[in-house]
Image (cartoon, rainbow, N blue to C red):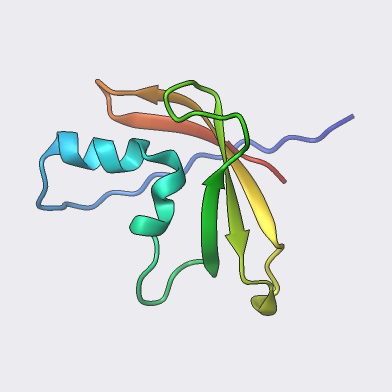
Length: 97
C-alpha cells in the first residue's frame, strides 16, 4: 500500500503589484524559474518544463523540476497542479516523491 503524507504550506508577503499580475505569474506553472531563483534559493533548481502532453490551461498539469545533484538533491521532482481558484487566488498541487 502506498503511503501518503498530507501537508499544507502557507506563505505570505506583500508585493507592490496588482493581484491580477501576481496571479498570472503564479499560474505560469512551468515558469517558476522566472521568480524562484535569486540569492540563497531554498533548493538548487536549474530548470523546469511541462511534462510532455501537459498544458497549463488543462488541469491537472505537471511540471518537472530539475535540480543540481551536487548538493544531494535528487535529479528531478514532479509537481502536479491539481486546482487553481482564480477568485480566491489559491492553487492546490501535489509533489510527487
